[in-house]
Image (cartoon, rainbow, N blue to C red):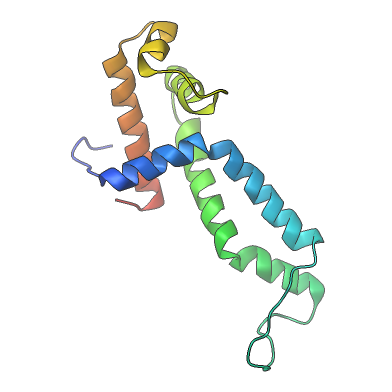
Length: 141
């Protein structure tokens, strides 16, 4: 990844918040899929015309799974984080786990640096690279 790649401050903060919420995002994806597959979603037909959803329940479910905007957005975020995470070396994965995925999320960069026997500045540089890579993967800037 190019060091010249810039992303907006708001984008950076949004992606970092998505890293903190990654496990909740995964749970929400499962919940939405279960609601579509097993729940009785309410289809509001405003205007009284024919619905654009297929009459066949299986086809309707397949259509909903592929066109549900919130589900699509959450899956895009989660898969971007996962693909970047899986490509990381073990030390950067550990940094992500300690900073974003351990509960309670109270560790500071200084505390993580001591725990990992590395410099705080190194951790911040890794974080910046990872967040930018996720942003590029998602097409955000």
